[in-house]
Image 1: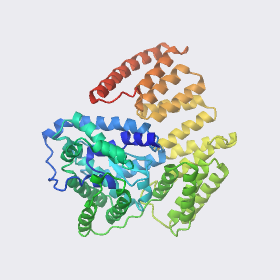
Image 2: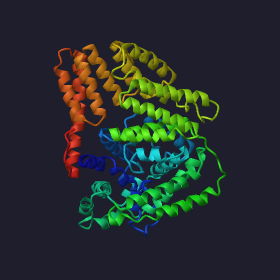
Image 3: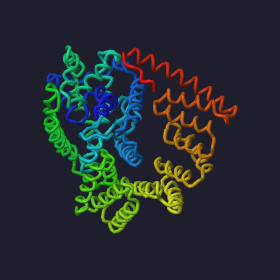
Image 4: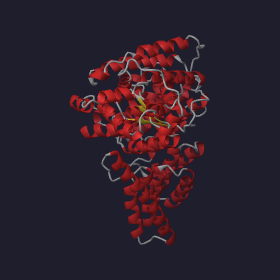
Length: 529
């Protein structure tokens, strides 16, 4: 647990420092370090000079490479696709959501038991799994994501760095959030806060109070224009306020007080009075994604038992969407326990409940009845280890149909490729994956599957070249170089393969040297990735 906590400190919580506050209680408390915070500065050339949009994006991508390697990153295709579809819809609803940098947003989830969300430099927005479970409606989720989009759109990173050199700020930010991450350890928190760092932290966070209010205002506009119930923001703020009381005793003393929540709730309530009430009917997919998050939050025996108990209680709800979500969740739990017949039976039950309910509620948007999410779990069951050859063959047929029905669903495309490999069709898998890689070059999973397909064909050089691309895209440049070295020694490497290896090695070695120099300049150890 100590190692896991340190990794979370380094990879996840670093992000909040750049945006001076997230939705969670720790960040709200952080904003209380200075009660006399001045108004937000006007963005000008100084801010742009200190952190250009290009540098902002680069910084976010660098942090994301670390996050993707973290064991708590929820690399779950249905969750990622839902969050990005949902988040993209929010961004599209508000003309100013992309800000002056025309931010390209990416939404993702991490496994964490605390209610929180955060924004990284460059438009990367993360959501804790506990927050997905705590959000009772899509309007509440929209209030959180809208708030984080507001941070990005208003360039709060550049505002923070306006009076500081980024080389000095980054290690300071890491120390601040090390204290927050280690709030269960008084010794760690005291060590970080010692040596006069408290005054430096205050200088960095002078604008935090206004930044949070500004993000609230932008989030409120996004919610309203996106067709969501704006009262969901007040409801969720209230839940955060309650949760913050539970967390406060674990925080460093200087970070415990955070009355901002009450002020922010009052501000949003005043805004709601000026907006006509608009009811938003949630999509079924929201409940299915929450069910997946509950199961993936804790895969231990105890965690699955607790998830089962929660789903069994949820089944008693009078709300049909809740019932379907619970049945879907129980099917997912059974799959995690390798109880394949039970998983299939419960998934069939969920689908039957959905058929009986058709027409009883509006789905709001095309495809939001959860068909793709149902298909993903059905394929996981049919393609699971231990299934018969006949069941896996049926899984291949189902995967092909699902990919045809949802051609943009990246998870289903990967499942189709995996089904081809499992059913002894590596040639077809290779052709399909090469086409996919041409369209989605930056997707590590495709290169991983391509490596697997090449291995099934006995093509060793191509197998390790594909694996090198997977590692490079995941931030492991040294590991990628190691794979290229293996590919070079493979007996089946063609002249073209060798030329490709040479070119890629030169590129990766240059990037690797830059990494080493940056680590040395920042005074941190090089991890030899």
